[in-house]
Length: 206
Image 1 (cartoon, one colour):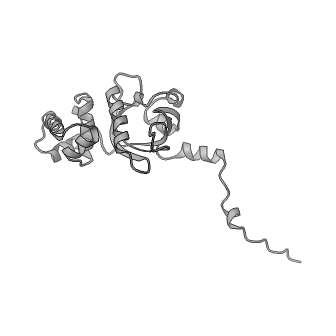
Image 2 (spheres, rainbow, N blue to C red; image 1 turned 45 degrees about the vertical axis):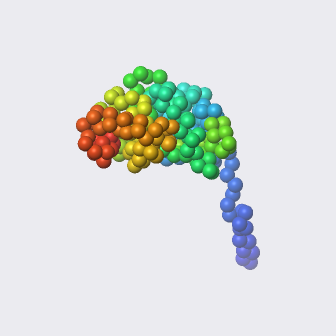
C-alpha cells in the first residue's frame, strides 16, 4: 500500500533560519572586505580585508582605522567628512586612497571604494559596518601620485574623480571653493595637465 504523501512544507519550514555559523561563513566569504567597528576601531574583519591590506587579520582587530590611511591627517579628515555627509539612513560611501601593510613606511597606496552604515545615525562613529573594495586593478595610481601628493591633495583628487565641483568639494571638506581651486591648480601642475578632465584621466592611471 503506497505511503501517504508528505504535506507540503510551510512557508516557515521552506526558509530555515540561519544560525550564527551561517552568518560567519557569509561574513568570511563576502566578495569585499568587511569590518565591524566601534569608535573607529576594528572589532572584527574578514580575510578579504586582511588580504587587501596585506596584513594578518589578527593584527588588524583592535586597531584604529588610522593604520589603513596614508597619514593621520587623512584619517581625521575622512572622519569629519563622514559626519558631515552621512545620509539620513546612516549610509556613507566614497572612493579614497588607502595604504597597504599598516605600520610599514613605504606601504603601497591604492584606490579603494568604501561603503558603510552607522548603526546609530546620531552618533555615527559609535558603531558601524563597512565594506572595502580594492579598485587598483582598474584605477591604478599614476606614478606621480604615489609620493608626490600631500594628504589634502589626495583628498581633493578623490573628489575630483567623482566629478564633484569646487563648491561641492569645498562643502564636503569644510573649505572655501577658492581654496579647492588652489589645490586643483597644484594638481594640474604636478600632473602636467591643462584641463580637469585631463587631470582626472591621469589621476586614475590613464
